[in-house]
Image 1 (cartoon, rainbow, N blue to C red):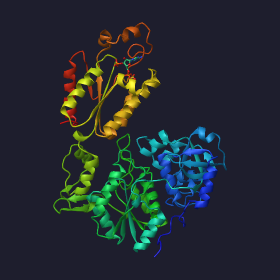
Image 2 (cartoon, helix red, strand yellow; image 1 turned 90 degrees about the vertical axis):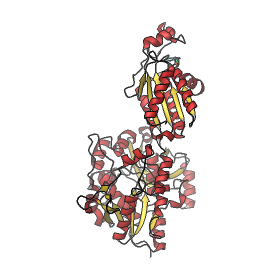
Image 3 (tube, rainbow, N blue to C red; image 1 turned 180 degrees about the vertical axis):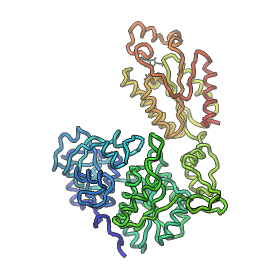
Image 4 (tube, protein in one colour; image 1 turned 90 degrees about the horizontal axis):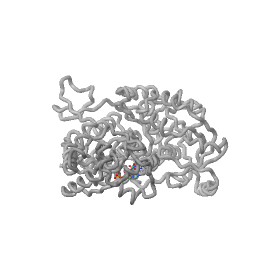
Length: 570
Ligand code: PPS
């Protein structure tokens, strides 16, 4: 049996040129203006080229864009809920006109496709945010992307595919729509229910997918997104290792795993409809929509952007038109007395139900606490513990900030020695003067140069932290914005403890160990921090210390106690 579901729009697109044409296109591309695709654009291009976004043949032009934004349809009338657009800079668009062709390259400069431009337009971003995502609140990840990352000009047009973006990871689990259709046909799978996910699978998901497949008498496709998901999600390498473990728990020959390089928008109901269309293109007949499908969480006002079952409601409207059957699912909870999972709305009144939220799971991982077997498979927990070790096994950064002569280096040195005495993790000291000698020797003290210097320190510290080490940084770091950037670079990889060395300026100036304050006062050094250049006092530092009050040794000891209380050492 061949494919049993028509692709969306009737024809499965394949935008790749044959090898002779691709070679010609490569030669031609040498003289074409070239655009380096962003990570998100690269995901979109991959799914455009391989037909996952059928019937699209390229990025949306102005007319289709407006129709999709306002009516969830292409101008031809075909249902399409999500704008798929190519955003470029004003500068790049300046020299372009309709009819021109541009080369689209990946981050390394490899030619992926060419685009024949049919439309150049400037979107009204707030209208797009409001219409597509129902909000202009920038805490919504897609709105944040649209407003703060997407470039101002959109280029629409048809794509000619030269080469699919390269993936070095999990090649055996990557299938394009035709490959999955062929696999289903070969296995004789006529009914396939797809499960979309961006999280590791725990027992509740396992129960839900297993029941869904049984209910509709279909085979199951676990189809996780490995392109872009919600910032802060578990990385896809860890997730895929988890999925492979869970796969072994389904009855043999019933379930398949394939990875989808989609860039999610976290667009709730509209995104659910989009996900369903995509799964239909991959040959699936059924699609599971659970609670809060593709939900971005809560907004600035603390309220969720979408209702928990909004996605199911919108899918109900379009299910027939898309021609894929939704398998709606309520939240699954563990009923302790029955020792089994049940949909939330089927549990008997008064039954003792157990659940562990995402936040609670992260807390338990952080602290190395028990994660019960009713919640997850032990192999999955072990995998998560490998990438999320408890805090005392993670790397961390102690970032000292304060005026010249405040005692940052002295305390940092004392702390380094104490940490080395304790052992367990390598310790690196990125002292202001040392960094300026080895990492930033060409930089001066303008705002631009100071920012660059701090960003370099942040980068090195984030690498040390990521690899499980301890980084002690001791620059002046006078600007709040740059300190915030450094925190954001490091926190995803481990701990970040900001210590404000708040020794008063008079004391620093009185000490004047290097004689720099005297020179600054005499005007011999321009832009000296605290004298003729600002120091923005930290507002959210984890610790504030003053070296005019206590010895460096006592200070270092206080920091050790703080690190213990935060769980980074024990
Ligand atoms: S920054 O602002 O964080 O990039 O500064 P940093 O890399 O920590 O370098 C500070 C050391 O450089 C000496 N120095 C100056 N400091 C402040 N302002 C000016 N204009 C300046 N020129 C030279 C000073 O000795 C600082 O060392 P510390 O150890 O902080 O006293």
